[in-house]
Length: 543
Image (cartoon, rainbow, N blue to C red; front, side, top):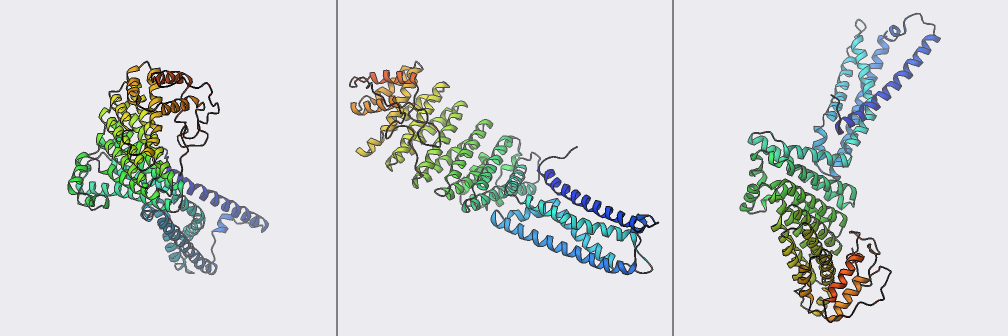
């Protein structure tokens, strides 16, 4: 059966150059040797002439060849030790262990050692009375192979230490340890747990080092590798032996478990989520290190946490899904404490997408909890004068309402109730002004309901807004009607304008505002630029 995959590709990268260099050297030597043989008008067979050895010449040549092989071995060991150490220092110390467990590396180094030893012994075995022709021919082949192998092997080593390949190798080894369905002894299971745990920590080390060096590509690849590991594990978790989920003494000594109360560690074992906890704790650490330094990594951590949550949804793993929600909340708390508006804006978006998948899966209670968390962090942002984030939360909860309504989810009424409670916590006039964006999101949602022939929820929004000042209602209405561009005028992460509604919904919006007796008809003049004016649309987020 043909061998495929990364291991086969790396071996081909070693074999093909070797064959090319060896073939070229052989053709050049035999061609020139044949020309010399013809020019010398030799009558003896050229092969027999080639294998006729002179003792004095052999003694000098064999000694020199032994020195050549020893020099090649020294060069290889020196180069390999330097590049492996540099890679281990830059990425993760586990690279050295991986290098010396690779069969190709061990085989090549062993070949160089054997060739050096054999060459030395053959060089001292030649006497005038006895010439070991087979040994000499074999030794010459070893020397030739040593010289030919040096350059392709260096190429193999650099390919082996490529960051993407290192990350992929760690991820595959950890996933194999975590998803092995075979029953094992307690010692074997402990070893598998240690390997899976070590793989996650090694990937985390790579990310932290890459973030410190502003190497976004490597950091992003390792973040995705942790996600791939957990998603693969969650999908196969139901078939893993029950012994895997026990947290023994060796796991309890790990820093991410030793800081927890014993009862909390027991809960992780009971809920069968210790590996997910470990991976998400690494995400949390990476998130904290990247916050303010490399926001793209924060965004990627949020995206991959959503993927883990969606994998848990698909597998019906409520405990793993709950962990994903808990860590989303942790990301938001940390982000708000540092007032990183852009990062929070992106995290809310991924959190909302996870809630939408929960609606699709019928997770009514979870959707209600997530809506409450949105309101909670939106009101915290409001109290910190981060009005844009409060407005973002309003639009995201409104989007959840639309999705729940379209899916006829029982969670709809609860989510709508949360949206209508979002603006109840104003403590000052300046904060009250910032909640204007919440009212815009509510009015936009009302136009959706009217377009769907659902007047009752639109009336709930009307009852909540009916005591607003007429001038404020009028400005909200006119601003929503004025926006004509679906996209915002600047490049933004979500790519859409919060306040844009199409022509059909604008007609429904006019009907909604006509319910307010204090409002005059909308002005005929509308700004066709699509800009939306100050405060309109999906505002640019400051980094």
